[in-house]
Structure formats: C-alpha cells, structure tokens
Length: 282
Image (cartoon, rainbow, N blue to C red; front, side, top):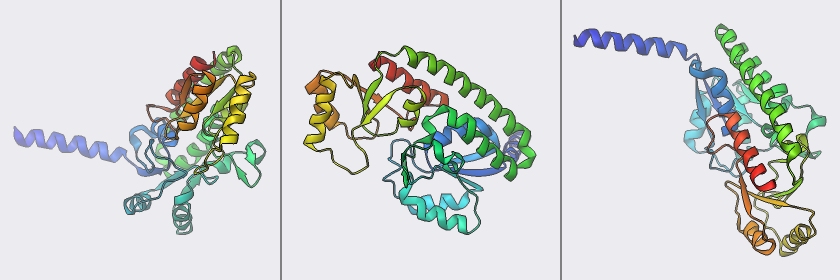
C-alpha cells in the first residue's frame, strides 16, 4: 500500500514539474501579478523586489543576483526605476540572458516627465498594459516556450479583455468624481491621471529629496484656494509632510498603493486604487 501511494505521489510530482517550462524573474510586484495571470502553472516566477520595498532605492543582495542568473526570462521596467540593479541587468543582457525592458515597448511620444528622464510608472496606465505591455510579454513567452504558445495566448487575451473592461468602468467612475485636482506624495499616478482626466501635483519630485517649508506652504495655499481638493500618501513613502498639510487644511489623507502590496492580481491593484481615489475625491 505504501509503495503504491508513493508511486502515485511521484507520478503527480513528475506531471506537475513537467508543466513548469521555465523560470521567470520579475523586478517589481505589478509585473509579477501580470505574469502570474499569463503563465499560471507553466512557469516559476521569482519576484526580486518585494512589494513593501522601494524599487528606486533597492540594492540587490548576492541571493538576488543568483536568482537573476536562474531566469530563462528577466522582466524589468526600465526608465531608471530599478536604478540600483541596472548594472547587473546590463551585465546579464550582454552575457546573452533574456532581459525584457517593458518600457521599450511604450512609444516615446506617450511617455511623461523630462525628455532625458521620463516618469517610469508606466504600469499604472491600464491602456498601456493591454495595448503594449501584455502583448510584449506574450510575444517573448511564445518565443522562449513555443510549446505553450496557445496557453499563454488564451490567458493574455483574457487578461486584455479584463483590462479593457476596467478601463471602460474607470472612465465612467472618474468622469463622475467631483475632485479633479489632487496632491500625491510621489509622482506614481501621472499616467493614470492623464488617462482619466485628473490633474496631479506631486509633493516629492524625486526619492531622497526633502520637501522644503516653502514648498509645503505653497501646497497649503493651493488647497486653501481650492486648487487642490484631495490629498494622498503612498505605501512606502514618508507621510510626515502630508500629515502637516492635512493638519493645516483639514483634508483627510487617502493612501495609494501603486505596487499592489495588498493585491492578488493586477486588476485588484487598479480597483483598490480607484476605490481610494473615489473615497477621498468624491
């Protein structure tokens, strides 16, 4: 009986491991959530930078470098988001490893920010995801693992349809939102805001930059004039300056989560942020 049970167990394990065709390493959680929907049990996905950690400031460990070396495919954002691991990614790409920078698939004319330093938070635009990013990932998956091409394509089509449905839903909700000018702690919402007609002012223009008293007072004056009507901190970003602004203006602070620290899927990431925007922006 024991031998029979062991034999069945080994068959199950062998059949399961045979489904796993490759290892994919992703730098940030939003792409982990996307890949999870696309590959399901056909690949092992390793997340390099945990959701609670800041990708702008993250420094790789020896274990991270080892994990990168395991990847049949490495999926990164680019645009200087993963600043501290960019040298490692460049080295691996030169050695012939498959490193996919998803920002390469966004038309230059659609990027925001300074010309030589565009805003890197491209995953926060659902249209970018279904128009450029998911198709780019799908093409690479099919190239590396052709025997599972149909499986990946079905999942990609399903994800694209769900993103399109959310896009339509979001447009309807944001059109009805009373507050059209908001303050955020960090410029992670700019692509989302542009897509859905919201003006965003960011308190911190860069990581490690301290907000001056003058800048804080200017924001407070804008709120008092009615030029800004809702304020949002962000998970992983120091909120002390926001607390001062809230205290001086009487506005409550919402909390955005662009990395999806508490999301189980990319759609849930968007839905939670939309809910928070509506909750505090009317």
